[in-house]
Length: 154
Length: 154
Length: 83
Length: 83
Image (cartoon, rainbow over all chains, first blue to last red; front, top):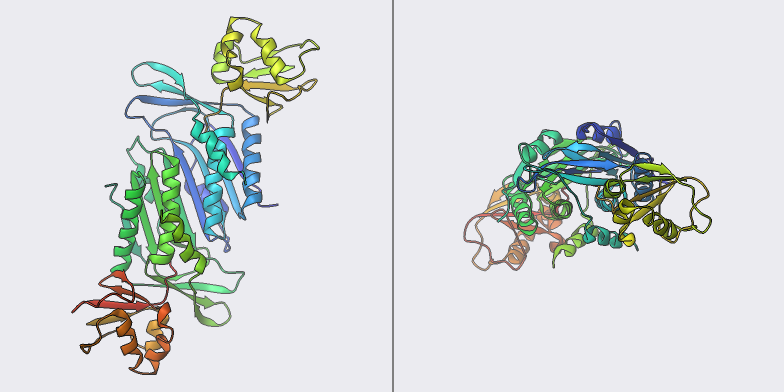
């Protein structure tokens, strides 16, 4: 069972306070709220922007599948995942996960799980735009990100 | 070394968005921001409020020691811990941890570590105020909270 | 069958999407990748290392042994780097 | 020496803080707890199970074997329930 997750894929930025309120307003059973915000870094000045490509339709579907897995595995009262696409500059937000639960471990572990799976399973790809050379390479997937999923297979 | 943590003990509520901005505004090297908010639950309607007593002076000192441990153990660009005291009603906030890092694992693990240590080491005590009977029992410490610290002793 | 490409697979093949009619002997994802490689230099460059190519069938991840559906949308893309 | 009490230790002893002059043979935290228990019914009730009592000396956690300082602030309290 579990709660029904809120899933959004959008170009515009998100407002973390609004997303928390959505999961907690009027509730008296929530003991822990965890947020994870993934942001664009400038890699020591090298990067002018990241361009995020996504697979419309599948992105929402896969994020929903991942979120439902989390909602089945941990007792959550609420769960939100927002992923942006398009050109995102250093300092700007890329992804948001919010988990709410009566207990802190459920909220923390579920957020950790969601980020691991979003990294390696949600159909998004990052292309670098360099400060001094325009469009550059596609970011390569890291073996450590794929390996991180092993932690959850038990 | 590590960053210098922001530590506050206060009766008033905190604003999570302001606390995040404090750690990220103008920065282009932050890739991950994690927040943990601990809230008062009504325990199925049984609870009218929690009253949080604290040890002024030691609360700040111990929270600073815990935060410095986290800042030495993980590579964090910023770290904030705010703990409230006084009477707190169901739905209201009790504690906030914010961690910022270039990498997601550091931010997530540090927030998890901080909450485990705050639970069992920061000098705060919760007294229950019951819906139908006024001031009730002091909340008892859980063995599982003390045991949670073992995870970090390696 | 509709094929759709993303990231450097899309760039190397030089198109976002196309409709193809597969010969009868192309029944699995692996056979589809092999068949596509023979279609031109762009395809050959994109699919040079087929083992790194990720595949989704009708918006769900699939491995290279999966049988292709009779109709539907098959997506080819590099390992994902979201989050 | 200044003693300061919190939560149900404070409630049972019936005061928040007090100044005491310790006899020479009270040198450790454990000896202080034993000495306090003999001071009255409230102390006896608060310190009935000394092993659960947590102690801080000058704002730092200390265990029951710790030697007391010559002067300073010693706090007695139940296991903490913050966070």
